[in-house]
Length: 410
Image (tube, rainbow, N blue to C red; front, side, top):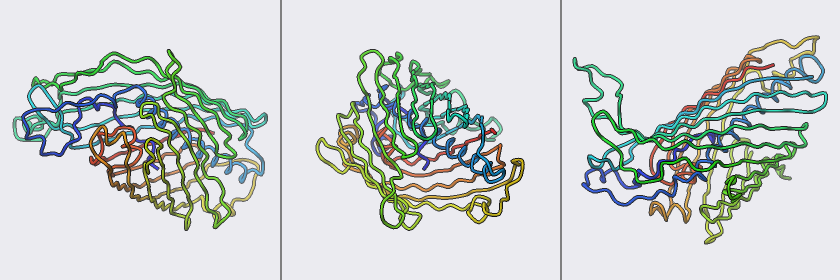
């Protein structure tokens, strides 16, 4: 899942209205609720979790290959990996000092992990750092995209609002029996930059950096059970608490299950997550319900398709153990399609939408040269549940995203 997509937090200048609003001469009051540090922290934690899972799956493949090639367990491993995640959401109506104007959201997330595992004692350590650059940018005029001789150029000096978040921390693991992780999440002051044409977004929200958040988590990887908490370091108020079990084996048709419960303090909601996967090998279904009032929060139907050259069971059985491990080339590709429905009390309070149908499609390619791996994901969609849950103002706005993961390691 392109679950690692960054969602920006500039709700204070966004209007969840139709494009016809751009013809209006006044700007209605807007809400700054989604500009809270609590929501920023949830998004960057989700980004880290997706990066960690991708990296772990990658390293498990490397360990399996070593075992098949040498007939023994890998004694140690070290790797570094990086992630670049860019997203663009179009067609927002925003308030400026020159009247209503179209804008786009184009956040960028940069992340990296370094890990070392010593299998002889079962100990693994990981360090990580992420930077999320969130920006609302004015749509350029025709004159700003044309040169003097009638050519096309990239516009510069556009009005924009930018806010950054960073997260750094570490993880300690013992075999697949226990893992603990902690991190610090910081935000930078909000920057409201005036364009070269004098245009400036109207922004009356707080611009100072908020207090840091602390992220702490623990889990049992063998059973895919994890929990985490995010809290304000000053008053130890929990912004979010979650415990989740994934890929639980079910007794029929090799199905697996999802069971999770979480609490979102800013919404005042206790949420139950349920799901079933591996239906006909490609289909998964998941839903969530919220308690106040009791309500179906989301429902989703998803199909995943993938093909591997080099990692299929018949490919692995051809490997004969030797004295040393050696590089080999493999290639993976895949695609997904999903449709969903999302509704929540918070969404209705913020935007007036009682619900939103969603659709998304995506694809990936993954060339694998053993010690050097790259994966590129593409996604286009509207109203994905994770997006609306984290920033309600993206409801009914299409987005396009690209994600690049690279790993070098032994």
